[in-house]
Image (cartoon, rainbow, N blue to C red; front, side, top):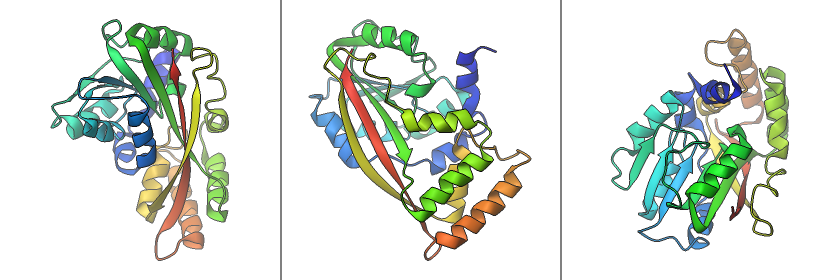
Length: 254
């Protein structure tokens, strides 16, 4: 199996936890993207690697035409369940490298928590092909903070139980290699802070949603849950724990 299909399949058996427990996105981020791209009802937005539709569910509120592209079957089925009621949204089974969209048909490309799975060179060619002349791409990552005592210990816990250490470490450098992806002097970088508050079950679900952590049926999962319970009990207040994020936006012309 080649790398493309390994990446697509990484979230098999994780769609439920991903859909229920992954964080959303700051409203300030959404307002910024909308206002800085002069979007309107006739605008066409392509979200590449839409997953279960967590961000898409926010994008459809803009009343633009939204095309959500997701190659993983389980993730896409979840997105269809959530988004089929929205008449301004369609969902396609294709990839960021071969969207199947028409030349110069898209006003804005959005990639949330997905760009790191793309073949960068092929995606760049495809972005350039489908974007209109002044259309931009907005690449977004929610990066967990590691500032509070709990957050620091949670990161240590992630490293201890991770089944893909290299993927965990890549998180730290996401966005560092984008200067050559965008047109010269067009790249904008913005940071938004986003807090989430979780019960223990929600923390477990979020942890299981990470592609680099043991899945529900993995032999390490019982021990992992027990350790997570200890960590939660140590730092939670009234059965709630805070886990904050720094949401990074990279936006520019192709």
